[in-house]
Image (cartoon, rainbow, N blue to C red; front, side):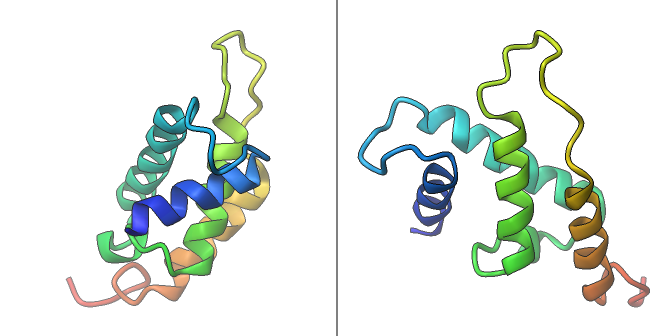
Length: 102
């Protein structure tokens, strides 16, 4: 189960025990939101939905850690600059994104 692996990776990143499930729904929403963001910025779906691409793992981790627990009080900061840098790198490394045939 690839989604379970990503969920567990994000729990570890958030220092939440794997056995706890109180935040699973919120974490899964952030994972799905990040994947959709990657797709809408031009990352091929098969790459954005892969749990085996290190850049995707890093982007999802940054996104989840930035947005987890957001209370809509304005406290969350913009996505870190490292997110933008990694997203550009992922886009440039994908032939479909960086000038493949249309």
